[in-house]
Length: 340
Image 1 (tube, one colour):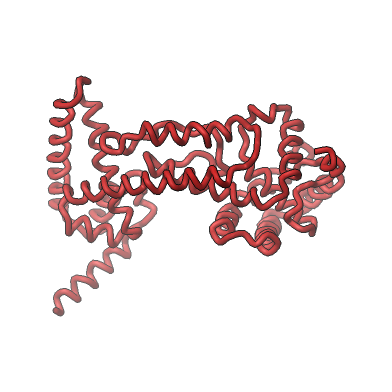
Image 2 (image 1 turned 45 degrees about the vertical axis):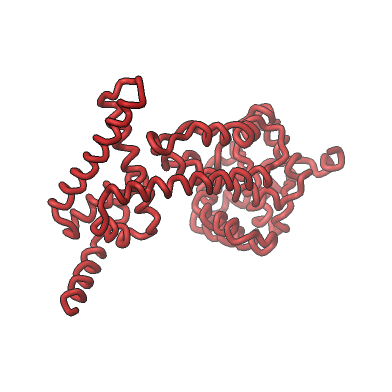
């Protein structure tokens, strides 16, 4: 009993040495093993054993491919199959949500079992992603924008139809046209699409909290100012809306009003010109609190706003430094609302 307690303490001490920055979701198993080896949690013999087990699974996969496929099973094909095997094992180990538990599973299970459990987990993620795509359609923004509508109505379905979880689980089938505020995800396979849809859905829910006519006026004015066509432009709607909610807060207005007059936009840029970066950080924090208090978004949306605080500060700093060339806020005539 005392020995087990000693081993637990030893493992815990070793785990505290693990640098989580060295453990990456996109190649979780391999980076986890490398880090556990570095701190002495596992011996090199363990790594050799894992490699032997993976090689056995790979050989079985390649034999199966030779039976069912007319394409050449060459070195490139073997590399893709190896990546696919690790993708399934990664997915299983990521399910523990903690590197310590994942390392324990690595030590306690054979790779074949983790691989099979990972395949089940990937299939479960596909079902979850399909459900997210249905929710995304239910919260869609009414717009003529082609990138937004094409992604929602065509590309997501195409991705799911073409996704081969068994032989190419790690593959990003296609990059989706409509951009999110954070840009491209670093995730692979079904993790990429699930992450995209989670963020897409959250952004939709935030944008849905504002008046449709004000949004329509804002997006159309944005297109005019940037000399682009509303239908063909590739722009993230959440970014435009959050910028204006931020501006309304800075002016002391109700943050649910998106329309900013030319005078208000001029006042905002004058305010920015006088602020230090630290002051802009405080303003952003206060603005997010104001938006949350005014609009009372659901927890996931509120967390998303807080998660973008640094990005919002960066936008304010860039707008401050750009001076007259800044285009963070879009002025529009409130009278135009009566014409919509």
